[in-house]
Image (tube, rainbow, N blue to C red):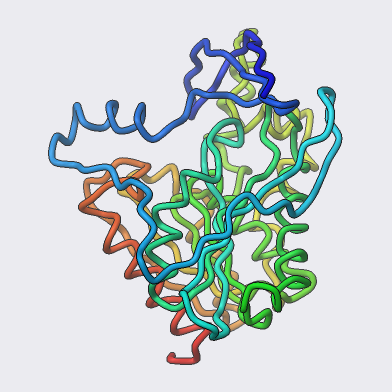
Length: 322
């Protein structure tokens, strides 16, 4: 394994810090967002929280590091991976593709593994998936990867006991934004349900537009969303709108479960999206945890009720219990 260090600026939320990008086997990765560092940060404010670690249940099979796509970058070839977890029996199950967060810049599929392992015990095939991040490629590369991952799951469903007519997608933070986007576009109709955990539904808000504009005018680093989208709203209007799920809602859009923290800015575009989905008669539901940090899904006491909200919603939509 070859590892190189590159000096970089990492921007999370509206602030920025200096960090280093690590190139591992031809893949540049920002290391600023990880469970341990997030835990230490949140522990100062909520000393009662408990991080949830990966632990494969006895009745769950794991097929990890499966390549679904190979791309070229400046350092060579990058094999994009996914992990596949399923009940240890011969039955066919609905599938949930799971998208990690990290501000489109950091994180990895491992962040979704604890949740994936537990949801697999509820009668689902769960698939945390890798996609290209800012150090490697800007928008729309990551979106294209995730849409290709859906196609791969559909085309390889028989190999893993997946009911290809029952595909759901979930995501946390930036992953929630991406899950919402591909589920609202849903041109092929393959996505049947979306679970959005604190991911925005629109970049086109006064708050986001003004924050990026002010940074540009004062020669400061752009916020991370503007970096991912290639510039400010004034510079990249098409990208800002095209990457906003709100602009894609139609009769093809999938039902959505919103699971939110108590921080309003991570709900941007949610209410407008629900209003549009209601016009098409598309089912939505909202669950909000009061007095919670943004990355609540990593920690107890919120991890277990999050699993329950997710599986209850998928049971309604995918198992026809609604």
